[in-house]
Image (tube, rainbow, N blue to C red; front, top):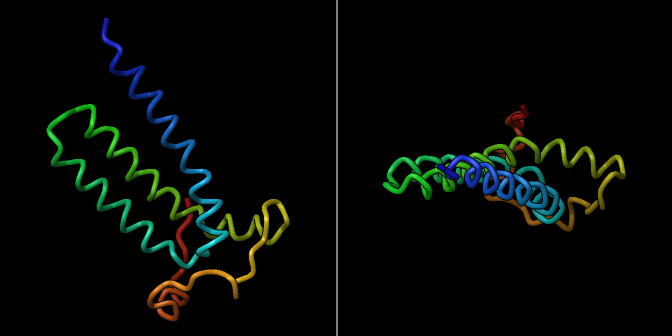
Length: 112
């Protein structure tokens, strides 16, 4: 019996489940303008998974990177949810500003 698929499914569920608090807290303390950095980190992690020889570790690292990419697309939506009162709102004046903030403001935030 091969349990690899079931174990990968459970680990994937756990990693994706941890992605939700990452998005919620990331938007609350950093703001949605950090999305390019989060997306870049996710793509770097996915790229790194290509060079891991262990199947198990490669899949886990790839799912972690994909969760970061997904999370970067959710930051803007999370900001809207916080403004609607669905989640605790933290004003922009209290958030940590990203490097190159003025350039990032001109870009359209991605969403799936």
